[in-house]
Amino acid sequence: MARLCTRALAVLWPLLLVMPAFGRDTGFLDRTVSLGGEAYRYQVFVPANWTKTQKWPVILFLHGSGERGNDGLKPTDVGIGHAIRLSPHLIPFVVVMPQCREGKIWSDPAMEAQALAALDHAIREFHGDRNRIYLTGISMGGYGTWDYAARMPGKFAALAVICGGLAGPKDWPELHVPMMDDPRIADPYAETARRIAKTPVWIFHGDVDDSVPVEEARKMAAALKAAGANFQYTEYPGVGHNSWDKAYTDPKLIPWLLDQSLHH
Image (cartoon, rainbow, N blue to C red; front, side, top):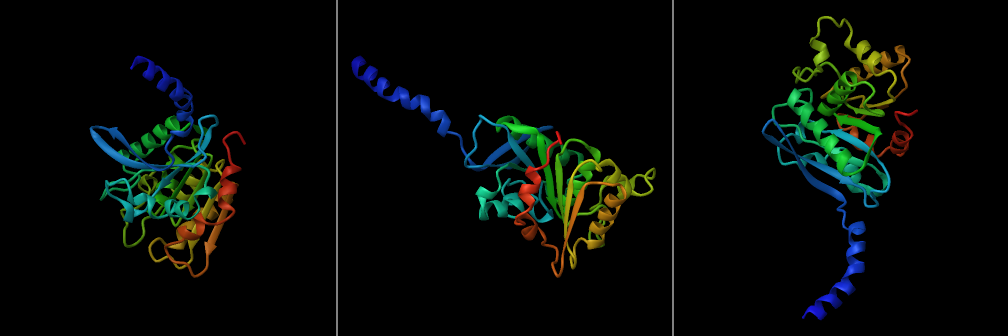
């Protein structure tokens, strides 16, 4: 029996050495982060060609109001997750998709904390490059993108803001960035632009958006222009609230993101 085990091990040993190189899961992966006694589920997309021998660019995606919950799955169905499912080979990033709880928005301190914790965990687990972290969001997540970027200048290499804003829409006035409540700031648009002026930004919005008025995007574009910021602005004629399907499949977006780094 001992001789048989030795022979079997001799046969298996080369395979055991090779297995770790092929054993890493890729695709959409379930993860959990715990903060303050709460467990928050999130998803990480890992490219099929992922390897630990290189550092990977990382995208933090903030979903919209319709994907809130605690299943950890809904954020993969809308926005960048949908684009990944259509063409996973075209998005060579580790993509972190936290989930905002029902009744909350991304500027809530607990939601911000869990999103940043998920980002940090994914960077450490999947060898992320801290000089190439990108922030993007849709609708409610677009508001979160402006908010996080303005309060953490220099953290993100670039921003892609889709149908977001600063002031809450008329049907949901509670959805606004905290800066709007600060009496010391006379013009939150100008102040946001000033803080993120060194961060490349691409804004997307549909001109007939009936959820978040396109004026929000236009105001931010004007403020960024006045601040001398590095930004691009894309307004889709005849497109309503869902401008994210067009934005995330724009053939220029991914190459543009990959060109940005905190070293530049």
